[in-house]
Image (cartoon, rainbow, N blue to C red; front, side, top):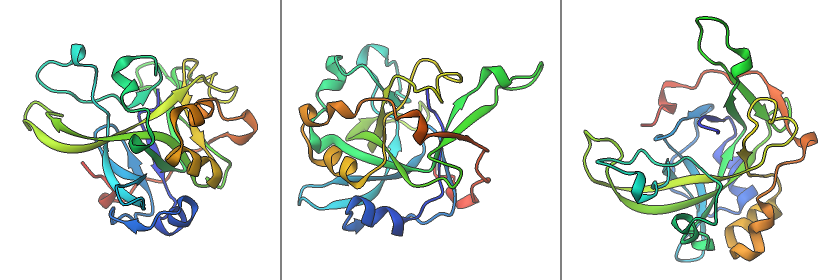
Length: 223
């Protein structure tokens, strides 16, 4: 599953694409690597009906039976028949997560004695802006044992079966990807019945394997 992605687009590109009205994220890093537990920009609709960019923490709450004294969170969501996830299927919990490339561990690339490298995927070699179909919620709990209970806003994104580009690297799943303003608009405003068809693999001709992104700036490491 995807546990690393990169953003090299800008706030000024994301706001008109998503019709975001407010920027509460303070985000304009030239390159941002995002790992589980990091904060990252998402676009959501808030109580006054406006769309805003804000930073939330990657990893939705785990099912209670899996939690002991802290909960590092679930980064990828797929089984929406689970009662744990069904409560958040409505549009008030929807968000979109901007990215320009995402990584999947590639066991075939491992050399003896070395680590498993990542394969990286993007819309094309120029890495256009794309969006994961995501969910967000406010939450109070412990993400790390040493931190204790705190208040958070959390996000994760939806997974589906892999297309022919991702499957040779990760045969189980890939993120649900939105590529047009119309898809983004529908995901942010539609009921689950209206958006559930978007849980599908991106066509193979809309995704390519790319080189790893340039290293993020120090400011991009947002724990």
